[in-house]
Length: 213
Image 1 (cartoon, one colour):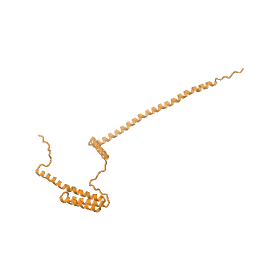
Image 2: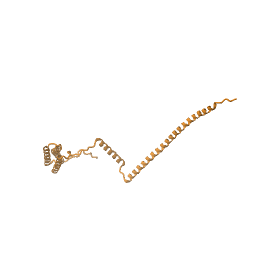
Image 3: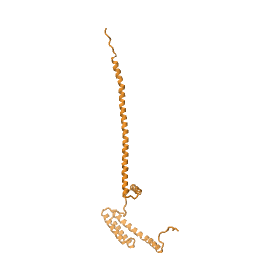
C-alpha cells in the first residue's frame, strides 16, 4: 500500500518539542536586545553625521557601546561580534566627525530605476529562452551553427544583389522610353513647321511682269 505524505515535518519526540519551546522563548527574550543594540548604533551614526553638538554625539556613541555590551552579556550576540561592531562604529564615528562621508546604513542600496530593472529582467528571460532552445552544445555543434549562420548571411546578401539587379533593368527601360518620347516630339514639331516654309517659298514667285510690245 502507498504511504501518504507527512503533513508535519517538524519535531515529534518530547525532547525535540522541548527544544522548539526553548528556542521560541529564547528568541522572544533576546531578539529585542539585538534590535535595541542596532537602534543605538544607528542613532550614534546619525548623531555623528548630522553635524550637531559634539557632546550629544559622544553620549550617543557611549549608549551604543553600552547596548552592545549588554547584548553580549545576555547572550543575544557573541562577545567577539560585540567587540567588532564597537570597533567599526568607533571608526565610522571618528571619520564622520572629521568630515568624511560615511555610509550610515548597513545595507548597500542599489540605485537602478524601474525601467532599467525591467530591461535587465527581459534580457535575462530572453537569454534563458535562447539557452533552453539551444540546449547543451558541443564544439561540433557550435561549428555547425557558425557555418549555418555564415550560409544564411551569404544567402541574404545574394538575394539583395538579385533584387537590385532586377530593379536596374526596369529603371533603364523607363529611361529609354522617356528618351524616345522626348525624341519623337521635336520631330513632329519640325515636320509641321516645314510645310509652312514651303508654301511661303511657292507663293513668292507668283508675280508676273507684263510683256513689252
